[in-house]
Image (cartoon, rainbow, N blue to C red):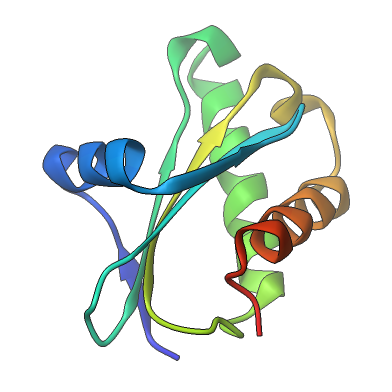
Length: 110
């Protein structure tokens, strides 16, 4: 399944307000069906997380966990991952497990 990047601020806002969400200590996941031919993914990490090095590490961890998950979704979605402070302090495998449980509870995975 094809996956692309969510870039526009208006797209992020639409997912925040209209989508469903799930939160855990390391990650917040927002999901919304998009009615397109591809799943679009966006990752945010705010200044609360730390400096540029910590924010980039958080995004790398989330990206690696999403890549390991694969594209086994029920439909095409807009997905936004929000990094939290603890994201930089844990291994990718823990973020992967939280991501998987978020997707299961939101009904996204097959």
